[in-house]
Length: 189
Image (cartoon, rainbow, N blue to C red; front, side, top):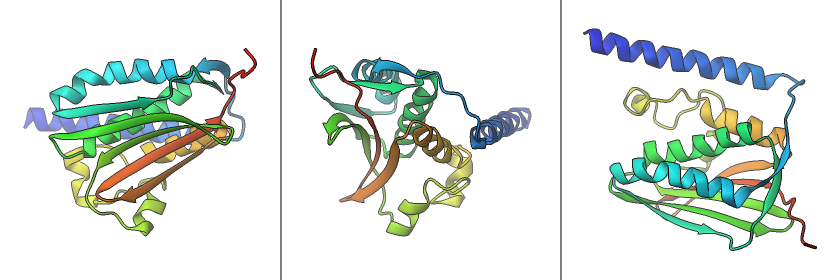
């Protein structure tokens, strides 16, 4: 009973922290500390940090990062939160064993990061609501999988603060989350 009470208190603490984070991001006066950052190197670092936990969960990572060193003007701390959330969701909701595909490509003046994992069929209505605060596709699984239903709403807000776009797509048993940010790569040098 003590262990269950402790776990529930940790869950409540996490929920309160996410609520406070979401509330602080909802304001109009958010100050971003943007810098020109190698998005490829940032993602390579995050992939290496997650590799061990993915392997422990019998998830194979397939990385398809552009060969070019590409840059975006971002607040690194905030954008790491977006990528971390997407990596965590893929870990949490992927069937095990399984695979997670991670890509970074250049497309029409943008850098597009995507992460794909297997998932049960999901309808267009659910896809559109995934970024709504507190929305969860399977409410009954919230205790089992953890999470608050705020992570994707926070990721969306942070991405929009950067002038970017975040979306999800479902096809053939896989869900893909994508983030597009302005390409700040200096093509002249």
